[in-house]
Amino acid sequence: MKETLFNILKTMILLAVIAGLFYMTNMSTTSANIIKTDNPNLTIFGDNIDSSYQPYIKDGKVYISTKTVGNFIDDKIVFASDTQKIIITTDDGVYKFKFNSDTATRNFKEYNCNQALIRHNEAAYIAVDAIKDIYNIKSDYNEETNTISIDKKGTSDLPLNYNKVNVYSDLKTDSNILETLGMNNTVTVYTESLKHNRWYKVKTDSGKIGYIEKSAVTVKSEEEIEQEQKEEQKPQEKIIGFWQYGSKVETLGDKIDAVDVVMPTWFALSAEDGSVEMKYSKEYYQKAKANGYKLWPIITNGLDSESNKYVEYTSKCMNSEENRENLIKNIIDILNTYNIDGINVDFENMREEDKYMYTQFLRELHPLMKENGKTLSADIYFTSYIDRSGLGHACDYVMLMGYDQRGNWSTEAGSISEISWVEKQLLSLINDSEIDPSKIILGVPFYTRLWNEAQDGTLTTNVYSMQNSQDFIDKYNLEKKMDEEAGQNYVEFNDTYVTYKLWIEDAESMQKRADLVNKYGLSGVAAWQRGFETPDIWTALDNALKTK
Image (cartoon, rainbow, N blue to C red):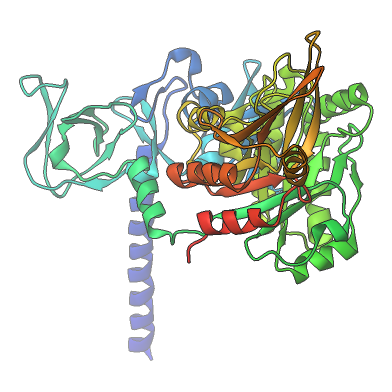
């Protein structure tokens, strides 16, 4: 009995010793990371941050200014002045933080954040721990240099390829050697901080920042990773879709084999609070689904109503965090209620000063669309109230409105969509706005304009469908000639007092537009509008864009 008690006592003592050692080990590890000063230095992605953006330590937690986040980590972070919230958007999440609140929201669902957002020196500060997972970053504290380092996880803790790697103080081998590393060491590589053919800027395990030769470590840039992911994806079939004004089932018609997506004009922003007017048609929906089509109905900002009133509604909705959230909730609720595949956002006639808040609305909408398995597209125009680059990065697809080069406002006759003009706009989206071509769908016109030039110089014009154009050609027995710059057939007819000019949309012009889609790797075409085309157009687009 005594021996048993002795063994039990011995075991308890041993366990206590082990527990004590474990506690002391963890305490010493933790102690190394305790920040012992109120004025630590800060580096972000290898760059020293100016003291005006100094971090703030409260209750052992590290906070950084939201201006620091905006300047060095995420230039799309937003402060909503109406609700006093900080908003962060990612591809799959919209995060909202309130001052001194223990809860935040992700995609409108609350979670605990333990007062992630506070005010310090009349500025907004956010806890680094609260944004680590959002931005895929890590933070470390170096007691020797009194420095907090924030780095990207993807380029952190990378092993070295060989031993005796010198870390230099400058971009030359005769500069000071800060440290010599071996294959048992790791480094953080700052690919964005230094663009150089030979050198990487790195941080060592001991916190020293210097330069090593690129051969010493293997690191993939974000561009390389993105390219590899693209190459792993199966090539997708080109999308062929059309817009339809209204919901006439007769216009929708029977199944067209080439068509994937239809976009009827079903929804509109109807008030500044984010209310949505609906013109949903169950009959149209059932017919479209029976045809095998996906539905991405259009939501406008009230283009068919009183223009000035809806410009005001749009402005007040876009500039209010609460109203944007209401609009997003309404859109998601409608799409889920009626089992609709996506939405096509077509906001026009906006104020130029609202362009970036319109982009913010789409940034906040996209994570909710993705979470619910819906597709987000938005229409792009070359106009001052559209932030083309912002839209291109916020949405799944952007639709380039590749028409209305000329209209009833024009002072000279000409094509509404010269192929050279369309190509110039595409190149601007790809090169200037840096939009991935695979996100661009080219809007093509199934209509044109007949121009009437009177002898006195008066110019009038009428919209012509493809069939209208053919009827005009047949009526006057006109011979078509190719306008190479326009990429269209052209006819002209002189009456006694009027000269008629017509740049024709037909299978040949559609072929040239499809050639641009293939040339630049776009996702497909969308046509305005269903009912204006002749039947041969679908065969032409199918042959040009679909794999056989």
